[in-house]
Image 1 (cartoon, rainbow, N blue to C red):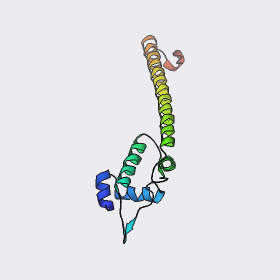
Image 2: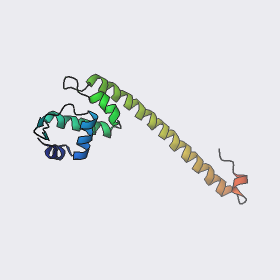
Image 3: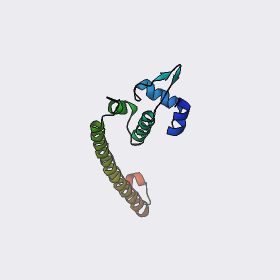
Image 4: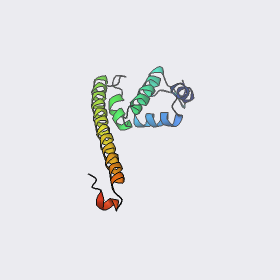
Length: 128
């Protein structure tokens, strides 16, 4: 299939496909005359690239994982990176939960200060 059909089936722009090819993410692409001829394997790689990006991977990270060796991505390395990414997301969730607690606490302190003070709030309220 040619790039237009691949773009349509993968829902990637032709510009993105050319970028991925330039970065080496799609492996070798055979040519027929001046045209590149893509296969179902390229479509699967594009889907994997899109999934990886949706999960927060950078193209440079994906290149290390997806650069086909023997026409196969490094599935073991991909699995390890997914585990690492999951741990990072769990840490971010914990940090955001703590931030939510801190925001609620500060809101409560300001509310109490507003209810108790009629003078300069900056002098009267000791926000922690």
